[in-house]
Amino acid sequence: MNEKLKSLTERYHRQLLLPEIGTIGQERLGDSKVLVVGAGGLGSAVLLYLAAAGVGNLGIADGDEVRLDNLNRQVLHRSRDVGVPKPISARRTLNALNPEVRVVTYFERIDSVGTAKVLISQYDVVVDATDNFSARCTLNRACAELGVPLVHGSVHRFEGQASVFWTPKGPCYQCLFPRVPPEATEPIPVVGPVPGLIGTIQALETLKILLGVGTPLLGRLLIYDGLNMEFTTVRFARRPDCPVCGEGAVHL
Image 1 (tube, one colour):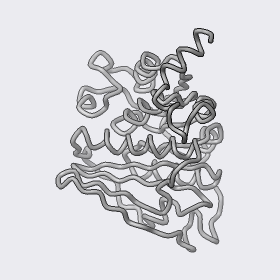
Image 2 (cartoon, rainbow, N blue to C red; image 1 turned 90 degrees about the horizontal axis):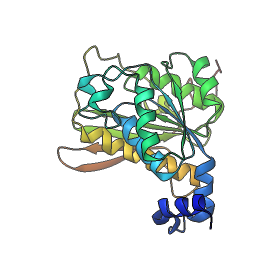
Image 3 (cartoon, rainbow, N blue to C red; image 1 turned 90 degrees about the vertical axis):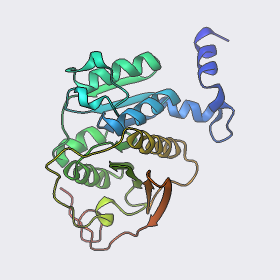
Image 4 (cartoon, one colour; image 1 turned 120 degrees about the horizontal axis):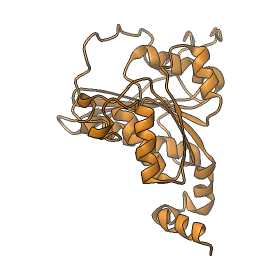
């Protein structure tokens, strides 16, 4: 056994023991491409666990720089990274964690469906780790039009939500939220471990999709209440009149 193969076998030993993964599954993860939009609280947990699991190609899209008030929840970044673009800080941390993973950085906000589709078309799965409704709707439409699975997460205070939107296999984000509420004008309050927990769930859903195992959160919204330590699952269906994935939807 050559040194590189020995190193990989040791790194992923516990995963290789799983019948749902094994050598074939680990090779599939190594060939996979995942785009994570947002390198903040949610994106930190997602990216760390996907890199650790051996997902071979990770894209990071974020137009912000690291701020001091990010550090209570955005565990990809360190105090030394304040003022550094988040994709650069994230790549540095991920390279230190797993140098076998290829990290591609995009220093931009996904503010149009056209821009989103250009990026998304290069990836197998997209993870929505954003913090605003406009970006979520843009990613949702782009993924729906391309048929790429979108792993959603959101947090507020002590609460979080997660789901998977994958047209035409299931309903999309705007089936669940047909009337998008106005954007918050103030920073979203959140306690640090909540995005870590929801981001970890997003990472697991992503791995399940890449491996083709288990049952993703299609048509289900997982709701987490951290104050009472409760999980609730709400089922929702595809809306025939949905402007994104419904019968009369028009592609942009």
